[in-house]
Length: 213
Image (cartoon, rainbow, N blue to C red; front, side):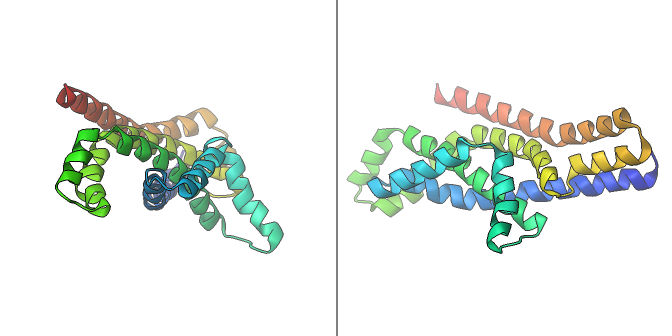
């Protein structure tokens, strides 16, 4: 494999990282809103967000990407592949992160909330200053674990024509007819991103487990 093919794989890696970052960051904003709605106590918001989560957790990510890219085009909303996959991954990430953080919010000891209420803190300040900082700490290992899955899931974007790392590997393999070499390098690139994150998530989980004793 020549320099040009390797640089093309690096370009695909760049798009993989970019897609993961956009999906995770936008999913974080939307997911936090979903988590707060789920923990709000308002039945309408709880049921609406529960349905949203059930929809995106209960259907394959590939199907979601197909609907955003091809389905919207049937109604005259033809989206660029990059925009379509960014929307698809944002919706997917928000559902999972919303549920992760909802669980973390509910895992905060009830006594902490009652103490904040006894200090006459409003519900906004209780959530902002007492609940969310602790929930963030609780949710970090699971959040990092989901990020690893999201990075690997970007390979599905190739099915709607987006050239990320996996599709770049397929294109290079079709050119030089060395699939084992090409996908070996692709696998190493995925591993180089995901393994340190997995180690960091496991380290945080152990650290918080010791602190909770």
